[in-house]
Length: 409
Image (cartoon, one colour):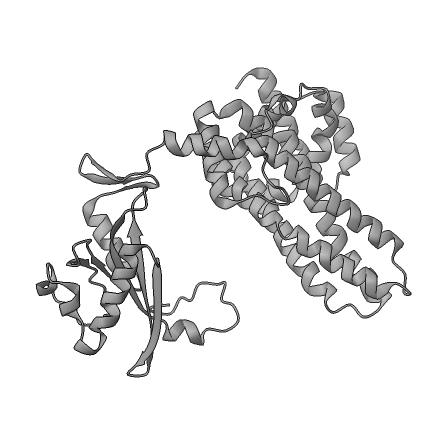
């Protein structure tokens, strides 16, 4: 790190410590501007990463993340804006479009709260509920950021900043959940004002603050670090997750078609491992995963013969290795053979892609699903039977968010 970079890092650490001690954000910003002046978005991310590498907990930076944004706001205004240079089909531009729509919702909610009265409480409550419901689509925006963009940044060494921002995303999620639950219980203007003070204002501040953090720090840093091929992958995977508040531009469809034809989504063997588009596994690892699944899998090939079944710990149906190569119709009782044959025939003809059943066996509730497997061209490859004992799942209630330390928990 250069001497100048080291000075900036030292000052930012001092400011964080002083903010802990009660220094106001305005005083911190004045000192920042006086001693540092301008700083690039990539420098902010790198210093943040460096502080975490030095042992500062991401939660500490997260706690003061809004203050950081305030400190950096004026400094960033004097720097070049790389966001203006992206095309309308670029993933960053799509993130920005979503942010503009989110700002419309937060602006509308702020205006609604400012004008609310006891006389129009019911209509105000209904409109707030509607806005909060619409805002819930932000989950897709955050999911694309956390599950697609962050991993690429982390490949280039930016791990700390992504953890900090993910924590702030979770704060927005919690506030949105509280606001949506709270508005349902509002019966008076006083209760609405209480909800505004306890949750709604914080939600708006945090959601709008995240927009600023993304556009001042995250997006410029991403544009600087990621390569063209990375952005192609981000775009393709974004299509799988979906978008918030917007319909992607028309040119996205043609781009996606080009990407799908350019990338072969096939599994193959390499260096003793099975390589998938989503990763690679050694044969022993693959077998372990299949046997650890809480369901039984049986695969019947296109010739109607059993090719494979998983061997999990808790079995529902009797499966012996003697059935490998056996015709599937001979693996079922005579009374149900016609049903199995009907399913397979429909799969082969393309009339259906799945069939679902459930039954009770010895006090256990069993769910069975047959799924047609098809290749990239839609050609039938075989039938997968998935059977699971869902008795335990049917009995679950409420939530469990903490680890149960009891044996088997």
